[in-house]
Amino acid sequence: MKIHEYQAKELFAEFGISVPQGEVAETPEEAFRAAGKIGKQVVVKAQIHAGGRGKGGGIKMASTPGEAEAEAGKIIGMNLVTHQTGPEGKLVRKALVEEAIEIESELYLGMVIDRETSRVVVIASEEGGMEIEVVASESPEKIVKEFIDPAVGLRPFQARKIAFGLNMPKELLRGTVKILLNLYRLFIETDASLAEINPLVITKDGRILAADAKVNFDNSALVKHPDIARLRDLNEEEPAEIEAAEHNLSYVKLSGKVGCMVNGAGLAMATMDIIQHYGAMPANFLDVGGAASAERVEKAFSILLSDSNVKVVLINIFGGIVRCDRVANGVIEAAKRLDVKVPVVVRLAGTNSDIAAEILQSSDLKFTVAENLADAARKAVEATGN
Image (cartoon, rainbow, N blue to C red; front, side, top):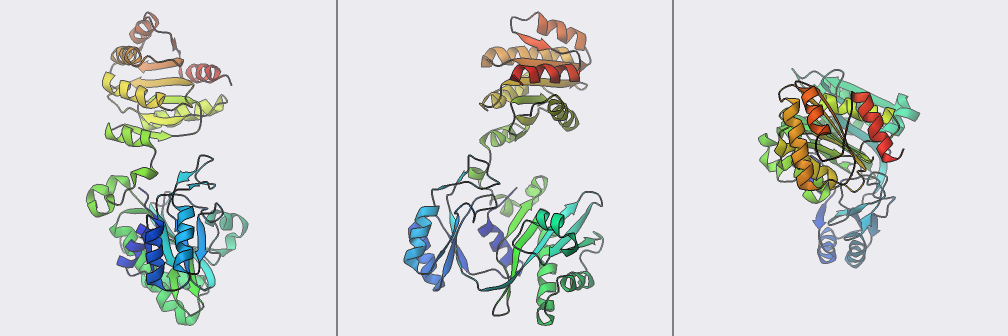
C-alpha cells in the first residue's frame, strides 16, 4: 500500500526524523491559512501517488499566503501527468503547503527488501534529487549499500559507515546516524516494503531534513496496523483492483490488449510471458485462485470486461483442486450471463480436461479451445489483430 508524501512525513515525525514545517490543504483557502501559519516563503506540492510532479507542474513556490492560495487553486483539481502516471494523468485532490528550504546539498537515502539476500538493504548516495536507478546506472561508485542482519537490526557502526560513505560533514555525522536508525525502526515496526527520502537535504543553516518522503507497506501485514491501513486513499487506486480485492481476486491492471484469467501466480506469470513472446501485451494479471468456481469466474469476467482495452480474453486454468469440467460449465454460465462480446480463448489442463473441451465446443457460445498454452497464447494474440 502506498501513502501520500504528507502522510509519510507525519510518520517520519513520529519516528524522530526531521521534516519541513507544513500542512496539507484540500482547498485554496486552506492553503492560504497554512502558508500564513508558516509565515515565510512556501512550496505548494501536489499530492498524488507518483513521482515527477515538479516537471509536470505540480510543485510551485509562493512568497505570500495569497500566492500560495493562487498556486493551490491551479494545482488542486488539475489532472497531473508525469512519467509515472501514464498519459491519462491523475486528478490532484490535495496539496502540501510546506516551508521553502534553503538547500546546501541533496542526498539520497532509502531502505528496501533485497530479494536475493532476504534482508533489508540500506541504499544511500551523495546524488540526491535524482532517480536512484539513474545514479546506479551512470555513477555506480556513488551508491553506498549496507545489508542488515535481521537478527540484530541496523547497528550504530553500520549507520556511521553509511554516513562516512556519504561524506557527511563531521558536525552532521551524529544527526545522520540518528536519521538512519530511526528510519530503520520505522521500516521494521510498520512492516514497510520501502522507505525513501529523496532528497535528504542539508540546509544552509546546518540542518538535515527529509525534503521528500515515500513509504510503501506490505499489504499482507496491514491487518497488524489498523492505524496505517486507515491512511489508504482509494482515489489513488485502480477501481477494478479494488473490486477484485473485495472478492478475494488478485488483479493488477496492465497496458495490453489480452485479458488473462488464470489460477495461480506462477501460471499467471507464464501466461503473461508467452503472450509477449507471441507479440502482444497482457491487459492484466487476474488470478482467480485454486477454486476457480463459477461465481469467481463470472466476477473475473466482469472485471476483465470493464477494461475497454481488452480485445480478447485468454482463460488458462489448471484443474488440480477443481475439475476442468466444472470450470468449463462455470465459464459457459458466466459468459451467458455477461453477454461476452470479445473472443474467448480457453486452455484447460488437468483433471477431466478432455471432457471440459467437449463441453466448451458443444456449447452455443463461440469459444476457441486451445490444445496447450502455446496454442492458446498464439490464438489470443491473433485475435487482437497483432
